[in-house]
Image 1 (cartoon, rainbow, N blue to C red):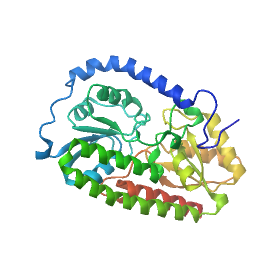
Image 2: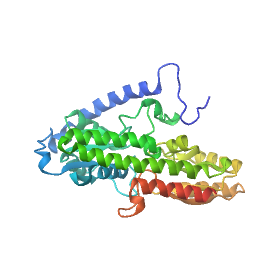
Image 3: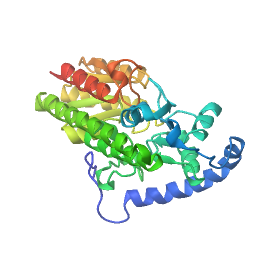
Length: 332
């Protein structure tokens, strides 16, 4: 029997348990292969020096994490983000300069739950080698995590689309910075409290805006399955052409199945994503038209990457607001 979004199996070995065992074995095997690379780039952890007399050097992966560190760390941190606007973390391959940025950091923050795809094993190896490499999702209760059917044994990493779960990640970043730089603990806590208040307001705004959409119209269709937590928290049915990871390519059968669903439900708008080629969603649009129904491209959403620096969408709060406003405008 097919499971609804967010529904978990309760009998027999859990998907999570099987997945953790496989991930542990994979990390061990791949880690052995990465030893020469890490040795060439500096090997073990270097001395951090007296952090109290300088800024804390932080390296992050995706922009959403970079933005949180800037808000929590303020002037005390020097943040280097590896993945900018339009970059797909699932397919991102680290360069030699990325490895140097990771090696030179006092602390590394990454998404975890295999969000970073090809980088995952490198990050795990850095942590096992003594680096402060922290998956920001590690304190999120497991029963709050989604396990998509096609992602067997693994969790959906797109937790930032549930603002309440992203607040857990904010607290994890705060705690880790305070542990590394205890002299600035009070500063980090003040910044965290102020930022969490912004996120409380964002959560309330999102709930109210989505509730304004007629119930029968709350169906969100995007390029890939990145919005499951959003749908689960804010009451929308969510469909993605590609799976949870964009490493899983959509087939012609996937396009036809989704187009049939759109026609049957008389859905008026579907959405492209900034980090996924538009051609995939345009193929769905064309297939829908061939079946006698017209569906509009409702706009561009930010899924795995934020907007350009210096724009509202270049922040986490601005990105979520943009997505909500775009969805509501198209559906109402």
